[in-house]
Length: 295
Image (cartoon, rainbow, N blue to C red; front, side, top):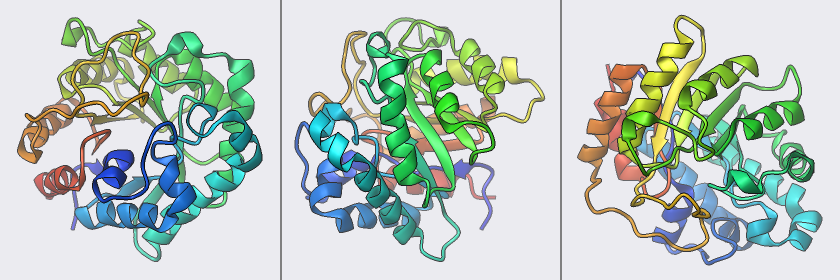
């Protein structure tokens, strides 16, 4: 089986919640990793069975915001190692790849909370724990260019391939394509090139705003080797001052798998080569995307 795109998995936290794994705030998807890690492995397997070429480690919620500063200090590295091992076990001898999720460790959707001096050691803890298992790094849901630059500084040169993914503002003109910091998507493309990323993605924003970002990024990248990807969420528009995962947001009812595939086709036509899903986009959506791009 061959495809014209690389298929990512979908949202892990919502799928853990759907299948009845331990799940509550503030731990979010980290709770299953702590109390029922086999449930994490099974969710990974579900996405692989749905057609994902790349699954993402369940390390997004391994931050002080979710598991507490004391637990992060004591167990952050070992929990990151567990997240990596669950992903690796799910892949087994199969052809899938494991992306090591590096979240915005001081708060999602909030570029104003970012402080590189505080974020660097937190990121290093996750990197140290995930390193034995991952095939590539996925710095995701970044709200500002500075967050991407810090990830590169923490990883250093010569590391595994780096994929950087930015979240966009949902309010305003969808064609404007700006990060939650207000920086334009075109600058995200220039930054991805400058830090030597292999793939530039846009995630955890509404599908409607992704096309403008892909178009802007493609115009900057031109013939460069940098790939473009998208994995949107199924949330209603988020306020500019929202803090992601501070509650269980509602899921839109107008994003059935066929609807999501329609968006995916527009992203691919504009230059996206990697497509998956974020919060609220589940295995049925990923199966539909995988089937739609078989060649």
